[in-house]
Length: 185
Image (cartoon, rainbow, N blue to C red; front, side, top):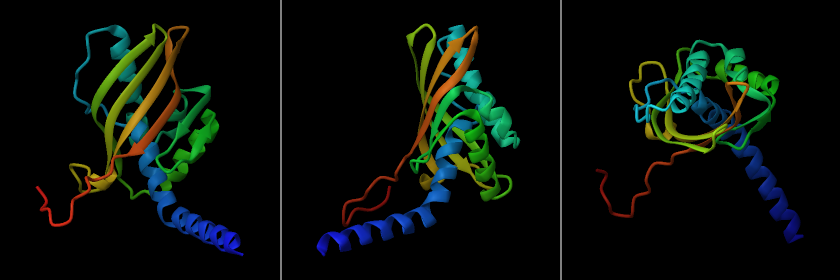
């Protein structure tokens, strides 16, 4: 009897969470990879580094222009996108559909920006791993609020001279927790 109540409560919580937070979080998480090229330039001068940064900028620019097909075209045929709310998509067609739905839910004029590329690595010459900070800008905003900031990890592979995304995953960057009695900075 107790187990049934716990399962019912868990199911109810999951339904509530998905109805309220799912669409909003999915939007924020997914668009992290669609960042603009406003990232701090810490590139090494390596042509591969520049190409990977260009890939991220191209995806962000396409998304911000409403070209979700252009964003999805940057993924490998078996590419994966994992949004901050845990939505897991694979294949460019699935990613394109998800991004189109996301754009329809966000206020018109919303933009996704990468605020800093924090790490670019090449475990092998044809594999790149990029970590960046990002955020959503809603109409009238010039900076992202804490609740709209995230961290994005992108894994890309080079095939026949072209870099394609194998995995893009975004996590929420939670505002710092304050201790009881502490004052905001």
